[in-house]
Amino acid sequence: MLNIRIGFGYDVHRFEYGRELWLGGVKIAHRFGLLGHSDADVLIHALCDALLGAANLRDIGFHFPDTSAEFKGIDSKILLKKTFLLIKEKGYEFGNTDCTIVAEQPKLNPYIPEMQKILAEIIETDTDNISIKATTNEKMGFAGREEGIAAYATVLIYKPPLTEIT
Image 1: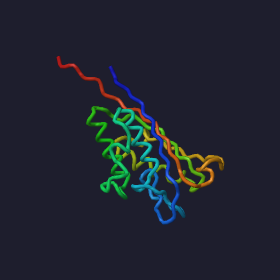
Image 2: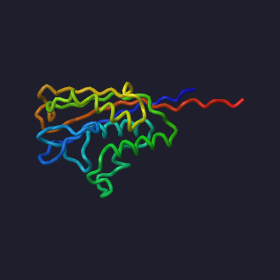
Image 3: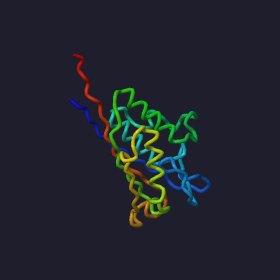
Image 4: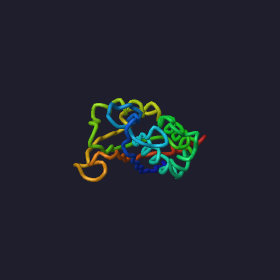
């Protein structure tokens, strides 16, 4: 029997002058970056939380606390790789992900293929298994007022069936 699990992740960071903007492992040209203990890549953080949740491994803050000097300024791609290894250690394989980034600015569609490629390499899957969409908040709420960016991710992971030895 195939053991299928679904996870959901969400992250948000506010804009800050003097910071680089990283989304999905891609450096984006923008007048603001996102404030956070790491590089504040909201897309990767949401994806990590979705993976950890699906495998019942708590959340990103549990594994990579923002109180730890070890993770200060860390590249979130490293966190995703460590997260992927955690689910692999628990016997799970990656199925697919569907992600949404919520931002008025910058326009993200030109960056999505590169994000898919980078995330697929880290997760050891095909880019067809990495869906990334970008939307605005129609000028409403913190994202609509361009105070920050939010990201959502859902994932499917599974444990392959054991094969019988005959």
